[in-house]
Amino acid sequence: MEFRPQIIAFLCNWCSYTGADLAGTSRMVYKSNIRSIRVMCSGRIEITFVLNAFLKGADGVLLCGCHPGDCHYQEGNYRCLRRYLLLQKYITQMGIESERLKLEWISASEGKQFADLVNSFTESIAELGPSKVKKTMTLSTENK
Amino acid sequence: MEEAKPKLKIAIYWASSCGGCCVSVLDVHEKLFDIIAAADIVFWPIAMDIKYADVEEMADDFIDITLFNGAIRNSENEHMAKLLRRKSRILVAYGSCAHLGGIPGLANFSSKEDLFRRVYEESESVINPGNIVPQTKFEAAEGLLTIPSFYEDVRSLSQVVDVDYMIPGCPPQSERLIDVFVSIVSGAELPPKGSVIGSGTKAQCDECTRHKTENKKIRKLYRPWEIIDDGLTCFMEQGLLCMGPATRAGCGYRCIKGNAPCRGCYGPPMNITDPGAKMMSAVAGIIDEKEPEEISRILEDIPDPAGLFYRFSLPVSLIRRKVL
Image (cartoon, rainbow over all chains, first blue to last red; front, side, top):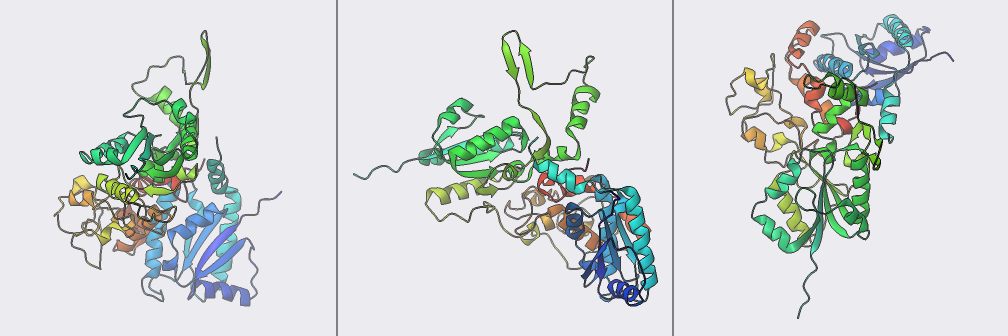
């Protein structure tokens, strides 16, 4: 059976979710593998959100926030950026491919960019294949 | 005449541990006499010659309190965890290894195969021309010999059996053990099952008396040997990574008092599941930089984030082992 990646996207309320909404209202067609979760700010995306997504079987996690300088709360997207860069180092150490986690800035007017991003990210995850996180963690609770 | 109160029966066991937890029990010094006055120690491999078979012959719930230290690494550890669970009214995960997986839990960065290859083939001091690795069974002339089997993963005690309480620490502070013991002997109402006892609920920073400001801004991170600590200012504000923000208080911030950053052995504060994730958020929060390249350069000062932030808690964290 063809592998259909499951992708969780955390989108900030003020820019990226609105951008995704624009893609929708403009009737742009993009890959349907994505499950969007709206958060008030990309700075709200806790590291545990990302880890839990992988743990529950996400093949890829996408983080989107306002462009640098545009954050509704001034600094939240920079916090997200720094968490993301640290998280990338951590997941690589844990054997999770760094390509499975992506951060992109999407403004409220970038519906087209959002649709393109979802398509390209879905394709890159499809090439990588299924994530082994959930399976490994399930096995490790079993008695061996 | 009033009948003498029956003495409590206590057992202390070590699974995959270094022995430090058992020594921490001895660190109560002369208070040990008070403990022995109120309790009989019925099983304690480090100090007493009582065999596993003797424990097996005890009635279920015979032991009042078992302090179980050490992680679950092999089938012997698991067998004893299950046995002592059955024989004990109260089972306490004592120390970081039983509570969180602890230092032995760092083995979850490797597979069993990697560990065996390293230990029996590659280690610089090993000469093993036949590439002999231990087998769990061996047919000798005298009969079948067996040793415990080594598991793929290290687990905490509560991942294997039902645990009543956790006393954190590497090792737990002996004073806290006495507090817990006194409250049990005095018949005080016990905390709800599953509680972490002998510790606080908030973070280390709540107790730490070092000078702290709200606005932490770091542009360079240091290893402890790279900087002369002023002895007064919050380690994080000096650029030294201290696990205090993501670690439960209750040890009396003894490392910090000794001018060493907290390493996190008391595990996460109440209601926090993954201390490493919280710590990463804290670190990301104080870096004073907005350019990705510069942030990455600053983060190069943390060569091993997984090992640093999950030093004691890898087996109980969300991503509890390296993905294979």
